[in-house]
Amino acid sequence: MCGIVGYTGPRQAYPIVLKGLKRLEYRGYDSSGVALLHNGKLNVYKKKGKVAELEEYVIGKDLDSGIGIGHTRWATHGEPSDRNAHPHTSSNGRFAMIHNGIIENYAQLKTELQKKGYQFTSDTDTEVLLNFVEDIQNNNNCTLEEALRIALKRVSGAYCILIIDSNDPETIIAARKGSPLVIGIGKGEHFLASDASPIIEYTKEVVYVNDYELAIVKPDELILKNLGNEKVTPYITKLDMELAAIEKGGYDHFMLKEIFEQPSTIYDCLRGRLDADAGTITMGGIDQHISQLINANRIMIIACGTSWHAGLVAEYIIEELCRIPVEVEYASEFRYRNPIVNKGDVIIAISQSGETADTLVALEKAKENGAFIFGVVNAVGSSISRISHAGAYTHAGPEIGVASTKAFTGQLAVLMLMALKMAFVKETISKERYKQLLIELQDVPEKVDAILKNSESIKTIAEAYKNATDFLFLGRGYNFPIALEGALKLKEISYIHAEGYPAAEMKHGPIALVDEKLPVVFIATKDSYHEKIVSNMQEIKARKGKIISIITEGDVISPTLSNHVFSIPPADEVIAPILSVVPLQLLSYYVGVSKGIDVDKPRNLAKSVTVE
Ligand code: M6R
Image (cartoon, rainbow, N blue to C red; front, top):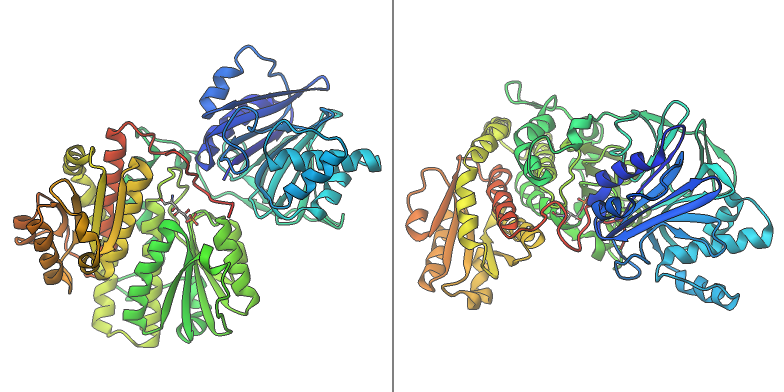
């Protein structure tokens, strides 16, 4: 949550910082701001609302500067407003700071500072941290770097901060713990950001800063130190990402582009790993640890949101194919309770961003208890991928739309590959079924493409139900998590209340909601539960609910019970979820758009949830 950008070098900083903020807006968008330094004077401009409002606000202002920091906010402490927007300036006006994260002991620090006479103009924890740094710097007459190091030893919580000093026209001091920071290395210039997207068009050489590291960044010098003031050698990596991947490419929204990218992202995920003709799955992270994986006493899957839904699908598949007990946990619950994790347990962490704070902390806890951590992550080089013992990337490319779409199908593809490989080695699957499922998986990109070619009919359904106030999504077996995912997508980007339920569970309560106004979406593809879900449709029809069904091509019964149907190509029930979710992504997209909602940046949400 929150996006941060910085630049120091020979160019004008403002256009670089502003463009970077637009790229990072998916991380938070309730206010934004920049701090620039001109002839020893700090110019700080900030505005409630999206980055476009800041852009308008600064017209005619002094933007001349070769150094700058910028922030786009997802509010934690203090409402979204001009005064709570970042950057914040220290009491003496000398320093400006931006921050992504939460300073947990800010209240205590604030009281201490207030006793010393400090006054605060915002409600943020960031302003407290900055004045704490200023106070240390004043009392010790030390450098900003030294003051920050001392301050961070007293701070608990998560942060990525950038500070500039009006007495030092070239240097940005940065530090991270728990919130991401990437530094791009240019020729005589440096770029800093929460992820690589603001940097990619200037340089492909980057350094991922680690927790508890401090960076002293000048145009032609980058020094990394730990909090003990020892130098750390920066490890330079080459970005494997093209600029086109982070632009809309002619689509109205990133979300739509990302939905339509799925045939190629799933293909990229399978490419070089799955060879159906040879009957092989080759994945370094799995192959090297296969005995640990298949001999796991138990697999625990830890994730949040959409990634948690991918985990639920994996639970069904791994238990069915590999006969290993699987538990799926919300990271936010796991980290605060006292879970039993033993040596011999395997943890699969699923995350698009690889930065979700709850997941990260849960993994650290499991790791301390001796569990083996396998990361299924999209963002290359992210924190979760780095703390995992092994893993597999989903290769979906940058996902910018706040609602996760192509990352989800990428997660399913990796988890399916993983389950198949484990089942094959463990010999819990017949050779024939293994071969058949490999062929089916290989065909997924083509089938997703066929679904997308039919997207117009989903638009019609969306138009018909855009004014509904509630939706129910029902599925059974492998499609139950898809019902949850369909409901989450709709809630997120259309603000319509929606619930996902196992279809059979409906009669234990939610059926009371059904009347002639309630749209009920059935994920009713042909599988071993099909007859049962058809009976559930009858139950809804008998109560006059409006039925929208996602069915398998050739199904003649479901259409007789449904008000609207959308057919998808036939697929084995293990593979079907990766197809059946696509029409639900489209449904939520078109409902959101027809209601005039900014589907890439729906209210109150942020793409990367780096706070608890
Ligand atoms: O980056 P992660 O996969 O760890 O994120 C987890 C959730 O925050 C995320 O899936 C969220 O639920 C999405 N907005 C869903 O569309």
